[in-house]
Each structure stands twice: as structure tokens, then as C-alpha cells.
Image 1 (cartoon, rainbow, N blue to C red):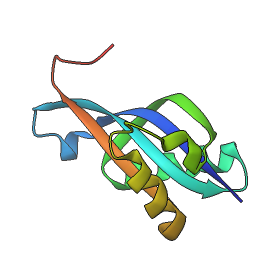
Image 2: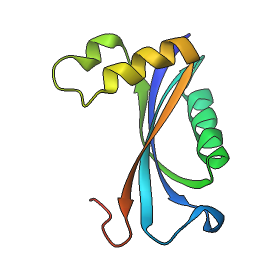
Image 3: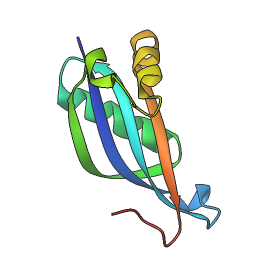
Length: 100
């Protein structure tokens, strides 16, 4: 199976919203047989964390070679996903400060 990098925009569910977080870009590394399965599983993880998944921003097969140089620690997430089969990281932003 391949390792997929999936990025999905999400907003917190009202039950998990303290009024300070506007949303997040959720980056997931998921070992899956195909992209559709990886996206489905990423969305399920986001829902389980109390967030509402939105648009798929990107999704593709990824390899260790993609994480050379300055990768903001993403190599560690990739390597952890090789062990756990999936890792999702929430890059949140405050209310009224949505990045473009």
C-alpha cells in the first residue's frame, strides 16, 4: 500500500468550539490502497476529533524523498505514519484570521 498525504480544511463543531479557533488545515499521512480510501479515513479522523471536514485541498502519494531540507517537522509525521498507518496534524488559526 502507498502512503498518501491528504490536506482538508476543517472547522470545529459547536460542541468543541471555545470561540477562539476559526478553523484548521488538517494534514494527514495515511497508508491506504488508494486516494479515495485515504480521504475517507482522513475525514473520519477529523470527525472523531470533533471537527467538521470541508474541502479537500490536496491529496497524493507521498514518499520520504518529499521531506528533504526544511520540512517543518513533517518527516517525523511521515515516519510515525509508517508505524501507526495514519497521523493527522491540525494546523489551526484563530477566529477572523483565516489564511488565504
